[in-house]
Image 1 (cartoon, rainbow, N blue to C red):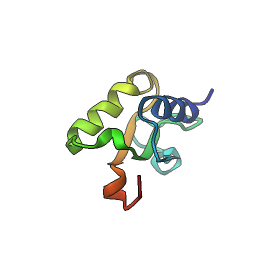
Image 2: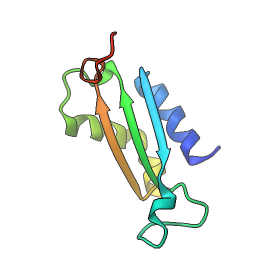
Image 3: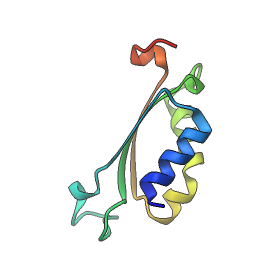
Image 4: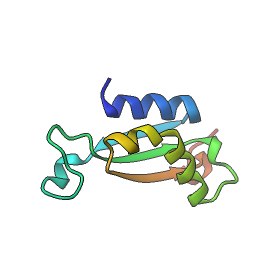
Length: 93
């Protein structure tokens, strides 16, 4: 299973998101810190879920980091997050 697939599986299981977009941006970071051959080191994640209702931006990000702790420890060097509730994303529940 690729790192991207692991991220998708774990975030889906933990948050049951209404929207989840995972983009591998590793190719943009060639030559920079943390880049490795084969990519899967730099990701952008957009996640929209009711699980974030009532949580601050920092609390949301901490919850995502907790779920992805293994990936962050082993290969993922950078994780850009957009964390929203359905209301913030303009989606209906």
